[in-house]
Amino acid sequence: MRNLLAFLRRIPNAVVYGDGDVMMIDVTADSRTVRPGYAFVAIRGTAHDGHVKIAEAVQAGAVAIIGEIPRPEVVLESSPHVTYVQVPDSRLAYARMVHALHDSSTRGLRLFGVTGTNGKTTVATILRGLETALGRETGFIGTTGIEYDGVHLDATHTTPDVRRLLELLSDMKARRVDTVCMEVSSHALHQHRVEGLVFAGAIFTNLTRDHLDYHGTMDDYARAKKMLFDGLAPESIAVLNGDDGWADFIKSDCKARKVLTVGIDDENSVVIEDVVLSAHGSEFTLCFPAVKRGDAPRDLHIRTPLLGSFNVMNVALCVTMAVAHGASYDVVQRAITTVQGPPGRMERYPLMNGATAVVDYAHTPDALRVALATLQELLPANGKLTVVFGCGGDRDAGKRGEMGAIAAEGADTIMITNDNPRTESPEVIADAILQGVKGAKQTRYTQVSVELDRRQAIRSALEQAHRGDIVLIAGKGHETYQIIGTERLPFRDVEEIARWNAERRTNGINEKPATS
Image (cartoon, rainbow, N blue to C red; front, side, top):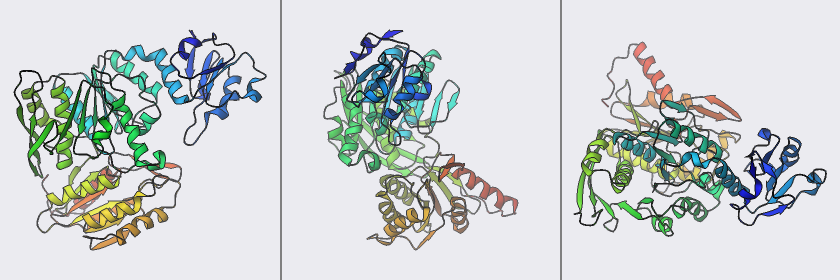
């Protein structure tokens, strides 16, 4: 058992009503898990307010309540033995209390955090692959799941709740994992889910419009991302996409011992030159400054199987982090040639009609623009580019028209469909996208249609494609479900492609697929 006062020292501006010396067994923010002797932290969420569960927590045996509202006399007047603590930020208080009980188990792990709008999953995956190739026992936490030492778990959030996160890190350490590469979302930063973690390094990929339904403005969104770098310890290393317009703001208060920017601009710490893109991968040169006193600058020729200029940046960020942490140039150069990206990120599938399908998670305006531009570069002379995509319901509605315009500028054929409409009207979402298509100033497309059944939309797009064409199926990537209403229905884009190919094979269509 622990004295509540020991926790309150970690919580700024806490006001205690009652006995601050009360002894407690554990802390929880879920009223359903309160047990006698627990402290309950009432947190305001986007959908639920934990303060309405205070009475329930007291009845379950909570000895202390932590919340943001003044002491609720109507609840506690009959329970004077229950200590109430008012705090400015319940999430911060919860994170610090959880760490006070559990964070010793994470010491000794090398944690690498990756944040940004696009590329978090890819960069964290590449970095994990690189660290593994360098001989580290690695773990991964991100959008595509949680993986370590043969354990594979689905992810409910890009970055788990602070308590779940510490449980995972503790188990990783027990299984001799020494390095963890993890995505750090803006929600996680704003909600203090990574509060108290000591990162060996942090990477910033970029910042474009996303999650404004939560953050409100781009400035607030950027401030959330910046929290990862503001909180770095002096022994840490920060690596940023220096070509992104937000990079200077993100690094402005960073206390890391090394803050390195990467990009094609000559003012970056590490410069990308001589980029060659092909359908089989990418090559480029990374020009490093002298990393240690007495070193000479070094040019490193990089080969990667990953496609597109955006993956050049993703790989460059990871190589830079590895080298900055002391890995040999030559070892990194060899290792990166075999490192693959995550599932659902520019995954190519040859089709039986000679076209190629590409599945990508692009679900933001910038990600869709980049995906389309990348595939345009890979199209043969007479090839056509089709995009199948939608926008999520109950999320940022402002990006729908923008993504429609981007599709019109970047694709020859557009198929608008469902992408987790949730409780919104699919027709309303599709119409907003369609208005963006119609309002685009410059258009490339020759055909646009709406098919809200995503399975049928994919099949139609594949059926209409010809040899040399590319069909981009965007928005869901690795996801294994479709949320319609409140139902989470099984659905995978890659399975629909495989089923369509198999049917053509069964029906005796013998045209060879495009080479991959």
